[in-house]
Each structure stands twice: as C-alpha cells, then as structure tokens.
Length: 184
Image (tube, rainbow, N blue to C red; front, top):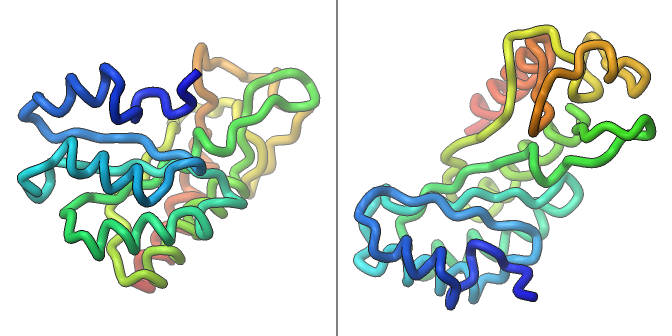
C-alpha cells in the first residue's frame, strides 16, 4: 500500500491536479522527503507560478522542526515559489483515555512554534496556519487557559468529524500566534 496517499507522484490525485489551473494545496506529513516534495512542486507547478502551490505541513508537535527544515531548504534552493502553511491539528490528533478523538492545545501551539522556528532557521516565510475552531463553548480539545480535561470532553463534545478548539482556546492560540508574528 502506498502510504503517501493523495501526494503519490504516480497516483490519480497528483495526475488530475497537475492539469487543474486553479491554485492547489498539497498536504505533507512527517514521512515526506525533500526529493518527493521537489518532484511534487515540479509536477503541480512546472511553470513556477507564484501563488499556485501551497504546501500544508501536518507533522506533529515533536517532529515538525526537524522534519520541515530539510524540505524548506530544498524547496528554497530549487527556487520553487510555494506558500507554506501549517496544519497543527491533524498531526496532533489522538484518542483520549475516555475514548474520544481529541487534540491538546499545547501540542497545537508547539507545532505552530516549531513551524515558525524552522522557517526562521531556513530564511523562509511561514505563510499560513489552518485550524479547526468554533466560537462555541465546546469541549472537544484538551487544555487551554480555562483547561478542558479528559473528564470534561463528554460535556459538550459536538463534532461529527474533527475536534475543534473552543472560543477560549481559539483566543489562547491567537495571542500565541500574534507573539510569533511579532518576531518575524
């Protein structure tokens, strides 16, 4: 089985998207290699049109900085004009002790921090962050300044798919992101 999924160079997704004229996004997990990413850039944006290709990293809090840096360096050296975005939610999803799919805000923040640190180290630009959030007072993700604990998840766990940060956790994230942007 091909573990690269939708980013398989010889797969139907890449083949189809190479012919689409609209801007594209491609997800990169911790197993992505520099060679693979360069080949994807060439396949999906052979004319190197700025803004056409966004590479969305979802590597996990503990892996992002080490795994992302070689990709950033390779893409920069090859001159591919990509937008780099961070999806800190999907690489940090787990099943809680109580059996619910969740994420911990600390891991989400750690992945964003690692994403920014990798870009700073490689002299590249962190172009965006994607998160699942709601203004509702849900209890789907752990942590935050008004801490949601594992025992709290069942109180207002409303998602049908991906756990979202609640309003307070979203503000916690926004303030942390603002601090990181001030450093850029």
